[in-house]
Amino acid sequence: MRWCLVALKLWCHFLLFVEATTLGVNWGTMAFNPLPNSIVVKMLQDNQITRVKLFDANPDVIKSMAGTNIEVMVAASNDELSSLATDSAAAAAWVRDNVTQYLASNNNGVNIKWVAVGNEPFLTSYNGVYEDVALPALQNVQAALANAGHGNDIKATIPCNADVISTPPPYLPSQTTWRADIASLMVQISQFLNNTGAPFMVNLYPFLSLVLTTDFPLPYAFFNSTSNSIVDGTHVYTNVFDASYDGLVTALTNAGFPSLPIVVGEIGWPTDGFQSANIQFAQSFMSQLANHMLSGTGTPLRPGVLQGYLFSFLDEDAKSIAPGAFERHWGIFNYDGSIKYTLDLSGGVANGVNSSLVAAKNVPYLPMQWCVINPNTDLTQLQANLDYACDHGDCTATYPGGSCSSLTVEGNASYAFNNYYQYNDQDTGACNFQGLAEVTTTNPSTGTCHFFIGLQPTTVSSSTSDVAPFHRASLRTLSLSMMVMLGSWILQL
Ligand SMILES: *[C@@H]1O[C@H](CO)[C@@H](O)[C@H](O)[C@H]1NC(C)=O
Ligand SMILES: *[C@@H]1O[C@H](CO)[C@@H](O)[C@H](O)[C@H]1NC(C)=O
Ligand SMILES: *[C@@H]1O[C@H](CO)[C@@H](O)[C@H](O)[C@H]1NC(C)=O
Ligand SMILES: *[C@@H]1O[C@H](CO)[C@@H](O)[C@H](O)[C@H]1NC(C)=O
Ligand SMILES: *[C@@H]1O[C@H](CO)[C@@H](O)[C@H](O)[C@H]1NC(C)=O
Image (cartoon, rainbow, N blue to C red):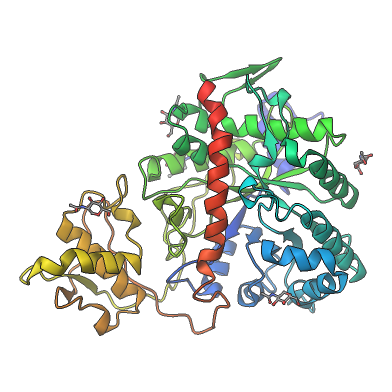
């Protein structure tokens, strides 16, 4: 583009990358008060999000995107890998039931473009149980897609944790290798992906490096640092994202796949339940991330627009908090689709555009009433009731560093009682707690501490059952333990 004068360079970047400049989002559904799918889909459209990654193949969620042209990634769970690997008929049935039955018909189909085969199946915490089945499952799924006539337009890949690579001291991306126990497997997988034209998918979490590594330098988690650099030959790294990403590029290059596309499967920053999980850091990280990925600058080894899926679109308050109370607060939107912070997902600075997020519309709130402590009662049973409410609800905002962490014990009880009450659809019996609680129409929220109002139960049954919400969360627990290992090298900075 010779007419691209220096002064117009940014504009030309915009023209060149306009097709590619969209970040996708992960849409997880482990919530006590899920927004109706139709509202979530409207939010996706209003925010011009054109790529969505799912963690399962929930029929209601998939069907809700029919006719939207949103590019959908559906997922097979790790539990399904074994049958997909050993039985090509099972893979064919899986592809039929979870993919092809939804595809385009009269512009009213679902634009499924990707299949995730398992989720982080190579975590060392799994002791290798999926190592023999993940690649055959990937092969069988891609073959089933091809047999169904969709080998070219739908690609399967395996979302990997960043623990599939390893960087020895002195922690230079150029020295990164595959993790020793799966090195030849990763080369085979890369070869398969290179053959089929599917990307390598990796999840990257600078936030976890920060929280799990005591001496991790805060600026290195963000993209605006000029210090905390790693000098690697002619390349300088000022953020852990680029360093991890280029470590993967190095491993792929040394395996013979220097240009295999990489897609970041999950990346984000939570906003509550922990000190560094706050609105300010999340806004900085996500804004900087969007600008970084979409600007075309890329990483030292991969200049250009970077592709990825933000984690996550909405908060999921039914996730396990074993890894940390922040687990329920990864959304760029709150549980009800309200906005947490200003964020320009189009990479504003780079594109000269500054568009803000668009909140959910027509949210079906329950009546504006809350459940709080009745202080004029015998409080001897307070703690037991508080604990019960927290066990059956979500008190993570009251944890140290959280948005409600400065409440009194009575405030804690009100917060917990209200959660329980809202989760139980404001059922009168759910605001009793041995006479300790009462309903009020006065909003008990104070400062940053928001006492929420539940949503009307969705009429369409969700296939996410009572037990399902904690399934993916348990995977994340393991993933976190791996991040400890990954994060430890940063200590040396
Ligand atoms: C996906 O397909 C498999 C195989 O037919 C089936 O057992 C499973 O129920 C499907 N998943 C969903 C969520 O429908
Ligand atoms: C990887 O794919 C590219 C693009 O199709 C091809 O040019 C290259 O030869 C492949 N590399 C290997 C090692 O198969
Ligand atoms: C970079 O962003 C972080 C997070 O908002 C902020 O604390 C820090 O001051 C910023 N650093 C610079 C050099 O602007
Ligand atoms: C975008 O607009 C918001 C709200 O008006 C503002 O806070 C933010 O700094 C702007 N971002 C850029 C990159 O101009
Ligand atoms: C409120 O609950 C949180 C979370 O359990 C706890 O850390 C805090 O100490 C409690 N506050 C009081 C005053 O008991």
